[in-house]
Image 1 (cartoon, rainbow, N blue to C red):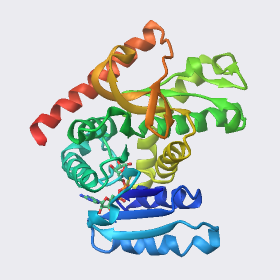
Image 2 (cartoon, helix red, strand yellow):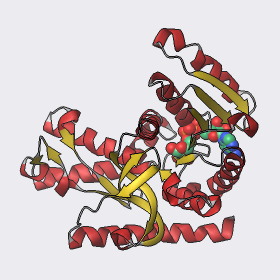
Image 3 (tube, rainbow, N blue to C red):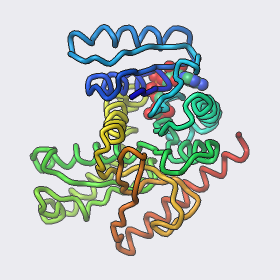
Image 4 (tube, rainbow, N blue to C red):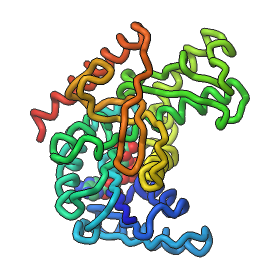
Length: 310
Ligand code: APR
């Protein structure tokens, strides 16, 4: 198995670190446009191998896509992160150009790769990659919902004082501060519905905190987060390379599912060796469907900006 991570910045390096620790590949390539950064991080990571006991061979390259040839899975993290006060959507101008050229370069050398998009605004970048790539829709997956879900669970477990492993929760819709939909109605702790365990006021607070989860971190850090995005990217890679058939909320191309067409947005999907293999229908209530439709409208209007850019 060969995996490439594009962008050796904070998210890319963290994702690569997790991929190596999990031994998901025999070969892992880091590629970045900035001279030396991918080589340096790859060498540093490679030197953790005897300490962390993995056998993955990690190499880095400055923009030489020939070295990524034959990759089975490619994770795109290249792009600018947001600064405090910025929305993910404000990154579109710069990141669209980057994601477009990266997708083209990757597919030239790895025509069968499954592509995971992490760069923001993630829904629009996934749509751009899909439209540009000309490969089956199942091979393009945006990671955002998994990260939102991890944050949702983290806030829920703090309130419920429970193990994260006993919680089930899902976030659908766009990966934006105003577009994501933490589905608290469906959250459960050991099969018990969460709304039966915490007050309505607390539920609203947790949903609100989840939605601005990324912005909260950006305020602390001065840039966007990397540990959870990198770990979520690696978990998605793991489900693919181990053909786990796990259900994750991911951004995929919809063709009528959830009442939407010609858009990439977060829905629960089965992940396995073919990429996303099936969309799970959660039978939304009419209020949830309205939220989903509004989220899709916002994502679609962001997608329309692409026409003026690339
Ligand atoms: N090709 C390859 N690498 C590129 C390119 C390109 N065309 N353009 C930029 N990069 C690299 C940068 O040189 C940098 O090393 O992408 C890396 C981005 O790393 P950081 O600036 O540390 O950003 P990071 O925090 O990793 O976020 C990357 O993920 O979560 C999202 O919103 C975030 O869109 C952002 C992306």
